[in-house]
Amino acid sequence: AQSVAQPEDQVNVAEGNPLTVKCTYSVSGNPYLFWYVQYPNRGLQFLLKYITGDNLVKGSYGFEAEFNKSQTSFHLKKPSALVSDSALYFCAVSGTYKYIFGTGTRLKVLA
Amino acid sequence: DVKVTQSSRYLVKRTGEKVFLECVQDMDHENMFWYRQDPGLGLRLIYFSYDVKMKEKGDIPEGYSVSREKKERFSLILESASTNQTSMYLCASSYPTDDTDTQYFGPGTRLTVL
Image (cartoon, rainbow over all chains, first blue to last red; front, side):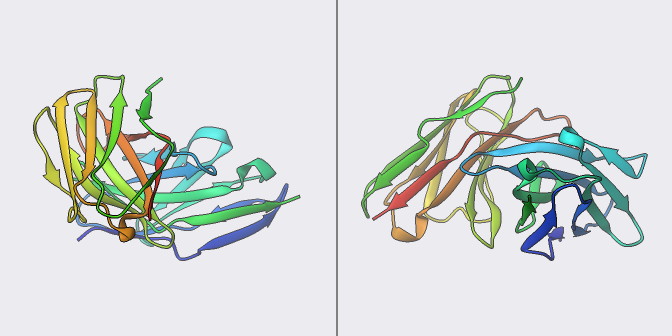
């Protein structure tokens, strides 16, 4: 069965510092991995996805994610955090037209 | 841009009421999905539909039903609302090429059942 884990409920980072939000996955076959962001009282917005090819995927708002097959991870990164990046982030894996979501990580960027 | 809209942002209903949540997408997507979001549990799939009048159960279909009479509209129905159905409900749609498809989400409906 496919699954996704986000081991941190919350991540705090100072503005201007690099940020990492962790995600690990378990799939049989090729993993198709996604990151979404949710701002307060809003729906989910697509950030980026990994299908195949380059292990470093670039997405919206300056975010990128690194796919690591040996560690079965797909961590979300940004070189310099902004206060406006504070939100809830979800990792997901796709299979048979369905997504399996992680439990979410709340990112708090401190000014 | 893909637009997915949901009929209400906030809804308050009483136990036992029948509740309809509506979702409309404007991108001619064939796949549509209903999720509920609860703190600490992430998003869980309730039902999805890959064509008009077609539906498939997701992971937590109990207490819910759906209707898809037109391609652009996907309705979630709570036949008899209960307090444990208080949650955020999110609708999504995607174009069905394969598992690499991006799902696009509506703004959500926060339902409170008293």
